[in-house]
Image (cartoon, rainbow over all chains, first blue to last red):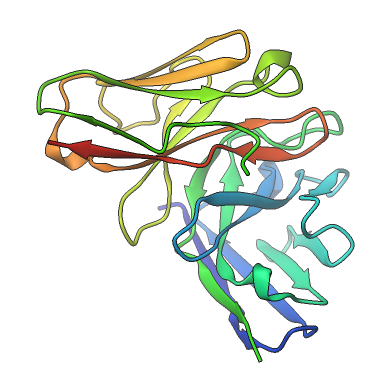
Length: 125
Length: 110
């Protein structure tokens, strides 16, 4: 069974940092692009960041650019999201998702066919 | 405000056909990038139901289909069933380098 399990969420003060992790099982992530997608309470889905199979192309939403850093460890089958300078508007459920494609320098995002259950990040004083 | 525009809600009676629209621009759907559709039931993660040109992942019934024309796309659900009640999102790629989602459409089965 293909599975993604996120961890690392929690309550953090504005300006603080968190590192999210995503453990994949049932498949090798080095064949696929991977993404982080978030959903604020009661709101829709927002693509946050994506990374192609070999880390040769990494992209970010404008809302997080310069503050968040995405990385992957294909040997460990793990995905990471380092979140710095957190703001109240970053409060959301953060999902890890597998792309249907390996991605390329020219195209980072296709569709997402495997999703984790999410980890909650709350930014509040 | 989402890059892709969807109606906030649609509804239909059991057995009917409903469509959900998704409008983009020349930098995403209109640029030829595929559109993907997700179903999100309350309290659960999104689930891919239509991929690209109406491809369905294993286990998704053929009542779900997608189409695209110009800068817009649509999801059609035929033979509406109570278990189809959910929020549906469209998603594509933008030439700016980002993934983009629609704001979501709540489907109510009357």
